[in-house]
Length: 282
Image 1 (cartoon, rainbow, N blue to C red):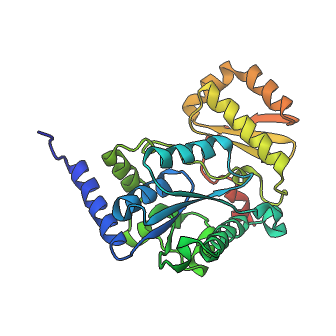
Image 2: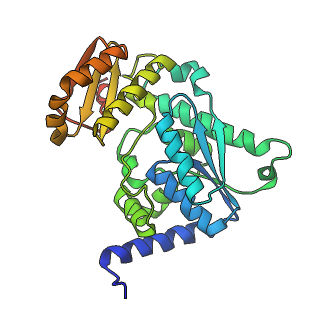
């Protein structure tokens, strides 16, 4: 007989709270990225509503093809209804300018496209009262997240914040369900790698995507390649510095081939949202 541990009991409790949260509604549209937060929302919403839900995946040049593939695979594995939305935020000059509010314009574009999809003639969602949910969690409130403002303006619901769920609780529930995203590292969009004040372009996004895919294939699981114009600043976990030194020439040559003039290793190691330090100074 399976022993109910304290950890499992906590996960069961969170699961019940999530299901109870969704029970107030008739269906759901999930702003889905394939990351652990939105993947769990989509999974639980599917448990609650069956086919009366939809995961809306925003596709654009800022979403790596590897992450795009992971997002598709998760919905296919769990039979979750999926709609791919082409958000076209790159066409917005405010987004491309990459000032401190880039994420605001990105999320705003997504939520506007979801509403456009809902209002298309003949779309079964046009007459549905299904609200839109997204995966911001309690930990995110302590970070700089301008996308939260866009969500509030569009009246997007945030179950994890309402229930006071943090990232650990979310990962524990994923483990409880046996979801393969439970240990998936956070992977924000490719544009988050480009230093503020430097224009977001398709070429830069491709450089970052190719560099990170290369490093991932070398065995680095947690990493970022920050784009500072002609300089690539590599962030990895300090315990992986030895592997980086073993592969130094290979890494350097590859990133030079991708167009970077200088290739650096950040001795502070990986830090989520490290580019926000420039905004804090300003």
